[in-house]
Length: 86
Image 1 (cartoon, rainbow, N blue to C red):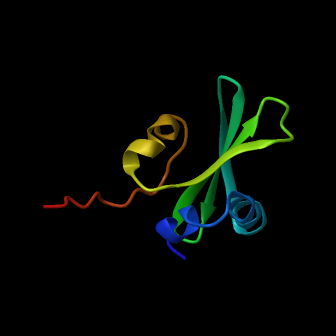
Image 2 (tube, rainbow, N blue to C red; image 1 turned 180 degrees about the horizontal axis):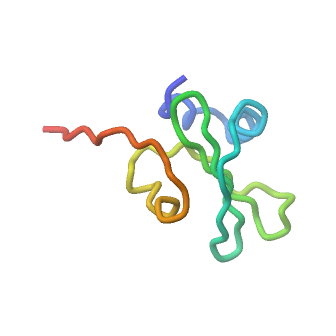
């Protein structure tokens, strides 16, 4: 499964896959959310938990190095070289 295919799945299925098959790496706090980072297949996934920590507000596969920048000062991540489209 690719990150693109993952992002096309329904949010509940995305969350289930990340939580059950992904490898938890790290979390960060941003405003009203606790954001968990997972490694799933060959891409990174964020799960945004709302303040109550019981509700999921967003699940997304990260498709660019820029999306990983909030983590790079804290943990070491494998980044794929960015392809320049012509």
